[in-house]
Length: 397
Picture 1: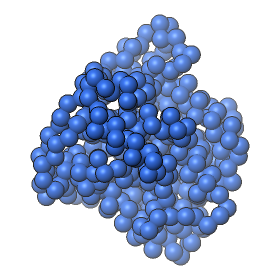
Picture 2: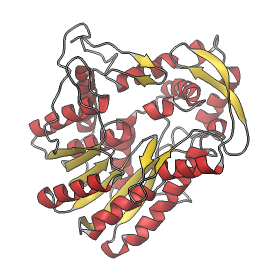
Picture 3: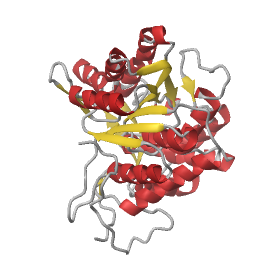
Picture 4: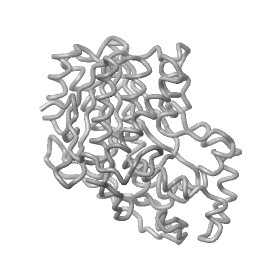
């Protein structure tokens, strides 16, 4: 079938297998162009199919030559209906890994569940023995708690009173004002249950109990802080409360790993276009202004550039790992530079529907959004028919 993008709000309902494949190949080639990483050899990536998780799997495999297991929750294609982008990404990654002689297997299902944890444990036991690095990169709007059976749904809301500020519809370019009422205690609790650190800790507990974490094993989860302009709805909102919990969990996990010399870190990453970030009011406008400034300064990075830098300059540099006052690795350092933030803030004051095409990079934002789903990728013939049903080589039953 021929496949074109169909969108509903911040979601793209279709994805393109060849476009996704080319995106994965581009990331692989970037990592290889930077030379080898003296990094981990056996890696588990929880949330491995898109964004920072996919970039972590690519960097581990094609930078450090690691064997990788990926856990994700993606939708396969069926005749006349496309798979999710993460499905196509994983299929492409595992094909390229196989061609390179690299071990790559995966498990598709709810990573919050005990069943998927157990299936992953059995696969590690059978094939890898122990894991050197666990990446935790889940992004989900809801979680069914494995112990209580309760369904928790996350919300994107402020906590400290009503919030109003500018945002942009990135499809139309219309800048408008968004107003959001504050979350109640139940909504805060549910958001922390979905996006906080409890499940990360459950994964590490389960792996350690089975003796599957190697001596000196590292685990990393991803977070975001952001600027003052997004603070009320992000870092001081419900998501921020969840990120606070995630970051605190790193210390709890590190304490639990002391006997094997292991460490848990949170890496604070740069603002990038993802399905999750596109759903957060204010963020699309901020990112479009940020992209313009960082590209002009020659310091713009995507997921793969960020994670390659995390591995090469921080986790596996051979030097003492530098963290901030709260123990976090900061690869948002270029975004948060004073000169960058001052320019973004100045442009924020000027941002209107009329001025944004000149002062922002809305076209770059839109292209990155469609790239997530394999569209608007250079070198892909979107008029050609492609097979929408694609198998993942290493998918476990």
